Length: 161
Image (cartoon, rainbow, N blue to C red; front, side):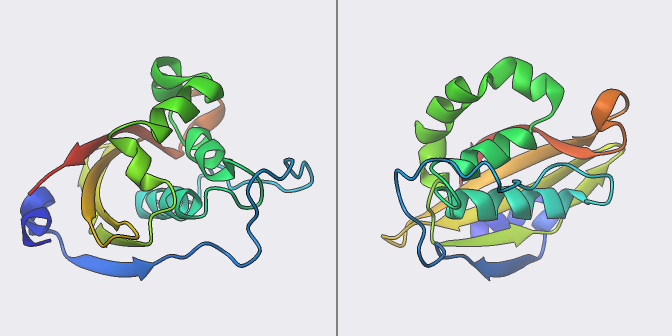
């Protein structure tokens, strides 16, 4: 973990354990009455990253791959053009190196580093076997269109010590 802390200017790290909710079932039909979290001008970059990470930890709640759908919902329009549509994005998230993000057990978040209208945050995830995986998030405040003024994810990449 010490190597991850030095990334992003030796940012302070807080711990946020996440566990799947009780009663989360695999293979249930999507509940169309449930509204997934979505971008909002009131959300700061750290809020967006926490929402995405929490959703991925509880990926199949309230329906199968709801966490991945939430993550795609917070992807910037440019990111969606590169990674979408949702079925392609889902395959990507379930593949190496991102697959460890789905149903992880705990997460630790660095402080956010701002560079203009961009924000960076490191997240370290721990899986059920106790292995740690680091990911860097780059978000940007959208300048125009339906998401103007909202922080959205432009890129996520694995980081190592």
